[in-house]
Amino acid sequence: MIYSQIFLKQQPKIPAVLTLIIILVTIIFLARIFGTKPQQSSANSARVKSLSIVNLSYNQAGIFWQTEEKSVDWLVFGDSEGNVSNIVLDDRDIPDRKTAVLNHLVILKDLKENRTYYFKLVSNNKLIGDPQNQPFSFKTSSSLTSTTNLSPAYGKILNKNGTPLEGAAVFLTFDGAYPLLTFTKSVGDWLIPINNILDRTTLKIKSISKAEKIKIEIVSEDGEKSTIMSDLISASPLPQTIIIGKNYSFSSQNNVLSATSEVASGFAASGKKVEILFPMEGAVIPGVNPLIKGSALPGNDVVVTVHSDVSYSFRVKADNDGVWRVGLSVRLDPGEHTVTVVSKDATGQTVTLSRKFTIAKSGEQVMGLATGEATPTIIPTSILTPFATGSATTAPAPSSGSNPLPIFVVGGSFIIVGLGLLLAF
Image (cartoon, rainbow, N blue to C red; front, top):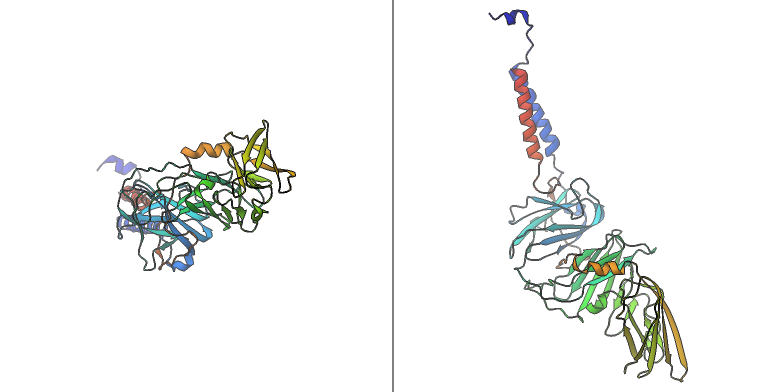
């Protein structure tokens, strides 16, 4: 007999069977905590209003969807219908901080060209597929080099109280092509490069001209909307600051410049009297080279003066339709400016008109973003069109990349087993 066994008091040991039972119960408990998934429910309760494919190119795609209430959403995707296990968070979220929003955007990167991908939404912890509860799908384009060489479309959007509108979704739609998307920045400005315009049918680069008709839809995080009808040249930049909730129509072809509820005063009289059609009184213009436009008697001279720190004067002639315009080649500094117009009316009397406008302080910054800001995005249908969904199923836990919970459970289980063995033996 070893003497230490006589003089040293033996420590009580837990029976091996009891130890194994404790370990088993602990593992089951941890699995229930970390492996719990949301309950199944119908897709209607998820309240997803619309869905659009965005940012589509040969190696990238984005998914945009809108919910009726603010929620923290994400999606799962894969390269086959039976494998949509990759989890991707909202583009504006990070793993440690997620924000409840109405407008959701997920960017999928490093995709393969000319390949079909599948995905399901996760909204309010509901896994949502198409009406047959199958994954939604999209196809990437072939690798193409953009040949578009047009100025970017940009502008500024304000709330009704005059404060900048941040985080609003801005969609730019071309007829027969996939549209483009960006979000407004903290000062309310937005910019969309006009490149990689893909044909809806062929997924090839579509030829776009400056006179191309476009539609711009704006949706705020408060659910307010604005629609702008324009041609492309009038959107580089938009000729005035947009107020959310109002609809607008701009065109360089027919001088239309109005909110639908506020038709430009006197426009019908163009060519019959001296008028300033643009800029509107008190307009806030995001560009630094504003277009000045108006009407006068056909063939009459018009003297236009822009009063700033340095004054600039121009003499132009009204065309056969009585329309005159001045395109400034100089860059106006941010701040308030006044334009004065002098011409003669039908009676030969000299008419002098003036109009005040403001160059937004962010104008130069908006121009500076032309090369690096706002990724082009693609939408096969209008964002305002609701879509039907099928039954929702159990949603995976939100994270960026693969789900780490099973790894944590298994690792924790091994630690517990090890501790149990030490206690038992």
